Structures are given as C-alpha cells and as structure tokens.
Picture 1 (spheres, one colour):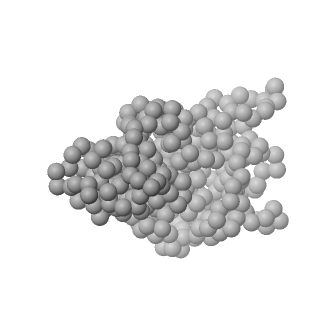
Picture 2 (tube, helix red, strand yellow):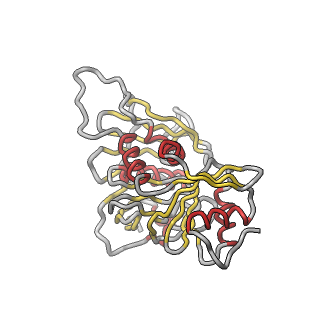
Picture 3 (tube, one colour):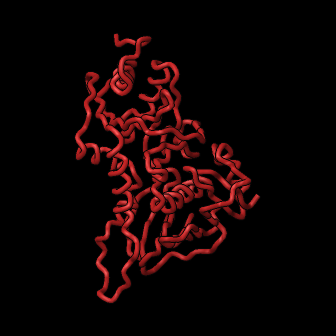
Length: 311
C-alpha cells in the first residue's frame, strides 16, 4: 500500500507515501475514513524530496511535545512551507510545501509515525482553509442529531465534560475528542469527525449540524450564560489552527514584490468564524466536574428534558 483515499470533512483526499502501510497500521483511526472508490479532490504526497527554505519568512514557531521537535511555518509569496525538526544540523522529521490555489501538498518521505500524523494534520489545515473547513481544538458531543462543540484550554476539562454528558444525558454520543472538522462548505456549519481524537479512540466518520458552542472554565459552582458576538469570537478564535492565524498580511514586502491574489489565511479563518457565529449561539459554562454541569448545559441548549433533573 503506497496510496489510499480518505473521506475527510466531506472531501476525498489521496494520501501517498513510500512507507504508507506501516504508518497507516500504526496510526489508529484512519481505517474508519477509507473511501477507496472516490476520485480524490485533494492530494497529500509524502514522496517528493523537499529542502528547507533558506529565505522564507517565518510566520510561526512552536514545539510539538509528542516527539520533542520544533515546528516552523514559513511563507514565500503564495508558497508555504512547514517543517518539523529537532535541530538545524539534522534533516527535518517532516517537510511539506503548499501553493495557494492548488489542491496538492507535496511532502518529503516521513517515517516517524507521530511526525507523519501531525504533518498530515497540518497539510489538511492548509487545504481546508480556502474551502471553508478547519480543525477546531475541541471535544464534540452529539445529541438529538446535533453537535455541540466544547472549547477550552488544555486541562480545562473538555473530555471530562463530554464523558459527563455520556453518563447523564441518555441518547448522546461523542463524535470526536480533540480535533474535529468545522465545515461551511455547504453554507451552514457542520461538524465532521476526524482520525485525530487525542487520547480517546473515538473515530467516527459521520457529520452533524452544529447546534451550539460552549466554552468551559472551572469554577466553584455551575453557571451558564450566552456570550455576546465579540466574546463569542474571542472564545472560538484560539481553537482554530494558531499557526495559520499568524499569516495575517502583516509581512513587510519589497515594493516590487508580486501581490497575492489570495487573502491571508488569518482572513480566511476569520471569515469562517464570522459565518459560523452568525448561525450558532455560543455559551460560557462555568462548572464543576459533576453531572449537574452536563444537565445544566443540556437543558440550556435543548430546553427542559422531562426525564432528567438537576439535583
């Protein structure tokens, strides 16, 4: 196996790599998204030798804790490069390039499983942005056929709150526990499961309309309130890919440099956020890690649930 087709966020994606069979077998969850009969719309090819740019403009630099490497996101005109490396003296663990307007990401062969998974995640972030699709760092519960996104910083309790829904609200299930897709490809916000679900093996390929977004914070009591549009934007924005948000058009370019026909990635993601919030309520849930928090949230979003009651 050196090529396979996945259905991700409603888009058929061809992924190729010289060692794809080993990477695929060691990366749990991808088998649930296989669609071998589809004609690919996007392609991510891990079989094109790449060299780190010496002259790209650095947009973002951050650490990837899973394998202790540094990630670099660079831009050169309408071309973007993403690197994962442990030091400048060593070859990158992963290196990919993308040209705006194309439907293909070219990447160097990658044999490290963790690096390959994250490089593929980043490649899909690039491909999806212009199509009205983005990963959202969140946990997602589905109830009555509608998805609820739980947002919060790492350690806030997103996964805990989702599990409390499972225990306390009959008929709900978890769609994804770390990195689902938010899509506006059809005009209305829809949430898709993905193979990236954190430490929870929840690999659900289905999709559901977005009911609400809930920002969580720990508190000595349970209380929920709907956020204003401005506060709602501030709640959702940090959960979209931070590196892409750094492409905000603030680069200083020479006067004779060619101008891009594409808006910066930050503008594209801001538009996705704005369209989502125009159709979706956002709440702030201050909560304890107890069932009453889940019940309070559920009844706020869906109205009285006769079979359930707060203590």
